[in-house]
Amino acid sequence: MKILILMILMKKILHGVKNEKIMEERYGLKVFLPIAKNYSFSHYDDFGNSRSYGFKRVHLGNDLMGSIGTPIVAVESGIVEHLGWNQYGGWRIGIRSFDGKRYYYYAHLRKNHPYAEGIEEGMTVKAGDVIGYLGMTGYSTKENVNNINVPHLHFGMQLIFDESQVDSPNEIWIDVYQIIEFLMQNRSEVYQSNTETKDYSRKYDFMEEGFEGRSLDVIGAMGTCYFASLNAFRGRPPCTYPSVIFIVFCVFPLVTLSVTSSFGFFV
Amino acid sequence: MLIKSFKINKKILISTIIIILVVILSIVLFYSFANDEVDSNETSSEKDYIKWVDFNVTAEAMKLTSKLDIESHNSNAEVKYNWIELLAYLASQNGGNFKNFKKSDLDNLVAKLDSGEQMSDLTSDMKFYDYYYEAYSAVLSGFIGNYSIEIDNSTNIGSTVSDENTDINDINEKDTSRCKK
Image 1 (cartoon, rainbow over the protein chains, first blue to last red):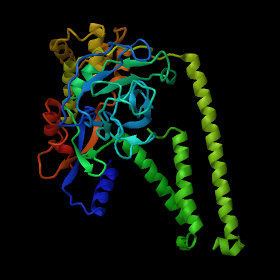
Image 2 (image 1 turned 135 degrees about the vertical axis):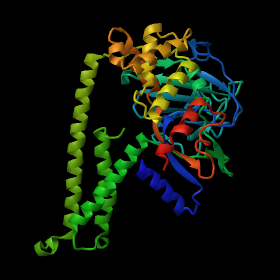
Image 3 (image 1 turned 60 degrees about the vertical axis):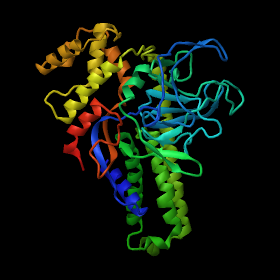
């Protein structure tokens, strides 16, 4: 954790930003309401209500009614598992928690510009990061179509005890209405970070233990490479071997990361 | 020195290193996938996992239990509460239906824990405690823990994370000074 805090501070120093903020370690609530701070919304417990688009089914989430463009933030840190168009969810994003037990589903995001800058499938996001913008897309096989009348975020949580439950008739979706009520106390503040694209970012950085493990693996791999290079070419300036530098600092880290991830060393 | 004394061609050395790395990677990946297959066979034969969860815990119950958890940890109290254990205990008593949840039920449990009783003893006769604990852990295990948050240097501690925020972050404000950088 301390290494990461140091890295964040170093990054800011390199970018010429004055040290106006400090990182503080805490024990407490580390999940956020999906609607960014200072943006209003309304909701009621609509879990299990009937839905008719596509086939007769029930509503497996909680609709948070708000204004189009409201920044949506990640409730919990995790890995972006799904990103793109779905005829039911429109522009949607699915994020799996690090322990693999929770799949957070954010749907009906904004037409034309549904996602926050830089969001990609497979990437890691932190709790409170801006991931997209509220909209009313969906209920259409055609991409980028608004067939929903009321702008809202569909927020859902799926529980996964076994991977066979991920995409099957045995999916477990829970009623998140009370969780939304509970999360009202913790909201992520955002600001417009790109005036051209009108993208938003979180105002205050956040770090948690899962990220520490991931980053330390990378740091560890790089450190291993460094010492390996020192040992292998002791007495010789390593800069005279560009190919060796490439192997040591590019190939070897990749190999190390592949090995650690294949053994499940990542959280 | 080694390279010079044995007159090894640099290209050959580099190629050798690459080949060795690729071979190591291949071996590791082979065995990791082999292990995965074994694991998947084991899980498919066991299939002993939770098939259904009705999550009916109210926000009030979550607020009260999380407050106990956070407060006890931040104050380094003698008895540290685990909010998921508390909720699982209550669920075992009310069948997972928190509509009629009473704070006094939680107070009674807390009194027992404060008097030195262990959760494992209190729940030993509860048939569904393990189920509720596992189910609620799946829902809530990522909610509370250690983290770092950026705060304004000039402002009061804790003024950034929450807005109209309330009890839980008030606790954080009061009790995290000990771990302030």
